[in-house]
Amino acid sequence: MKKNIKILIVDDDPMQVQLIDELLKNEGHETFSACSACETLEALKSKNIDIVLLDVNLGSDNAAELLNIVKPKGKINNPFVLLISGYEYDNKFIGRLIKEGADGF
Image (cartoon, rainbow, N blue to C red; front, side, top):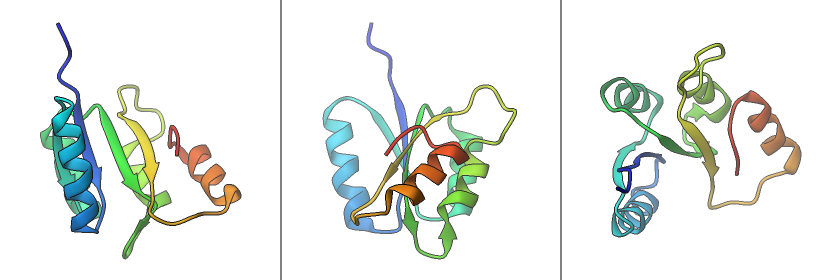
């Protein structure tokens, strides 16, 4: 039996969220969305999220700070976090976010 994977899309661009949402739902995944740190925290508390797709450039919220909310150090059952972006970023910046807790880009 195929596991129903719950994916949280964290992005402040509604078009990006809609595109990613449709692609993932077509593959049979359950999706949720958040456009801020507050909404992300609420979704993490109320849903059993398996994967977080986190936009690197999330408006007023800092991706590194949001990683500490999504994957607090010392907690065992953290969701898998993949960084996403519509822009090109310096490898050092992405490397720093991976060291902060992201699982990939």
